[in-house]
Structure formats: C-alpha cells, structure tokens
Image 1: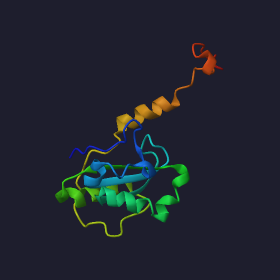
Image 2: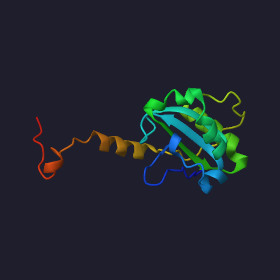
Image 3: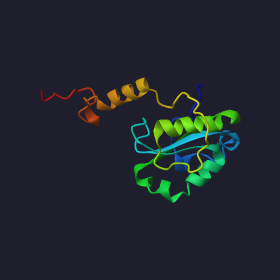
Length: 152
C-alpha cells in the first residue's frame, strides 16, 4: 500500500518541536507516524517510536514524553501519513516490526502486518549517503571557483 509521508515545507523532514500544530492538515490528520533521532536525511538513525492516532494529539504527547525528550540534543524528527482507519492497526504492526523502535507500544494491536511504502526507500538512502560522502572541492567562501588539490 502506498502512503504519502508528510514533510515540512522547504526543510524536508520535520523537527518534532517545530511542527505547526495550528496547520489544518495537522489538525485534520489521522494516520500512522514515525518519530526518530539523529539524521533528518535517512533512516540510519534510531527510530524512537512508531504509532497511530490523531496526529495533533500524537505531537502533543510526544513533545512532553520524557523518553523522547531525552534525545532532544541529537534532534527529534517526525513524519506521518494519512491512512484509512481500517488499516491503522495493520500498518502500525508492520512499521513496528520493520523498524523495531526504541519505545515499543505496549498495546500493539494483534493484527496481521500490512506492508506499506516506507518514507525512505533503499535507493533514496544510497543516493543521500553518496552525496554526503562526496569530498568538498571548495576551498573557502571567497574562492568558490578554485578547486582544492586532492592529497592523493
């Protein structure tokens, strides 16, 4: 099943503390979510929590959850996808089994997992890591046209 994972305008993945809870899309969304720490670019970071619910309520709860806030210095990111209510339990089970979050829902539904499109696919992760590993050829801000001499 294809889900459309929400990203914040112009910045990519949402910083949990900066999600605009006054936004109508946030107020009206029910779906599944992922909360993670570390890099905002890929899923090589720790998945902290997976769940489902009214997204406005979820954000409010996560912003006060001590176990989540313990990771604040490393950055806490959040995304969600709207999902038909009759699939919520099954998608939550799939995401939980796939990501094995640090904080597990003790009341995880006893449902058969429903496979969904993940927010990061393997090709996207590979390309992002490749971009991050490219050497920087710019010597400084004043000399952007000059390339560094590589040491090898």
